[in-house]
Image (tube, rainbow, N blue to C red; front, side):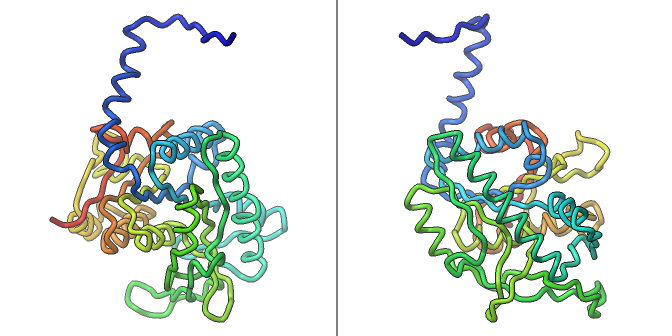
Length: 305
């Protein structure tokens, strides 16, 4: 006979657990059957304990009826592998300069290693099934070479095989989702001539969210969200509209590496995604706290009213 593990917990300790489930109920009802695209990267992907937490969050979301699609990054792992191969990583405005050797390593690490690890972790949790893909599979994504232009519109340095999403054909994703699989996608895709390109994961994920008509697009990052003062966690902006975000970019409040993340959110909103979120993936179970609680923990970007 199986016996429940007894813990030294009082009713006062146990009741808040039930209350959390009740608080989550309307969100489960609202998002059941809806597609949520998660861009998975940063510390949530690097730290072993955070990886386990995030994977469990994703599995739980799937089990309560959400249709979850994951796009993952892997920049640090790519850089580490490059260094092992005697190659020095180089970046131009935050984008990896990608020659043929770098492209080969990037594709190997993203789709050959990291994607398989995420798939295996989801399958090992149980109750959900995952499958690894790249933009190449099923003709999902067609890319074109990234046009590196300076702020004044002049042509910048050639950064190699770095691409942008031109078109998304979501049919293979619909097939997998309808069969109960969680797609795990590496941001690699070819152009019309078959040339492979490395694509920044944030805009890649936004394009997937647009094509799937996702109700939510979630970016896991290594910051709390959008803050008016980067050194003051209390300055976190819990929600703002697209136009308000654009104004903060013009004012310089949103700057540096946060700009491409916010622009990816704006792109998703313009494509019909209802809500976009920027979360601190360093917080355990950040996905659950954002999606299933009234307050949330990050920044939510909304369409203009």
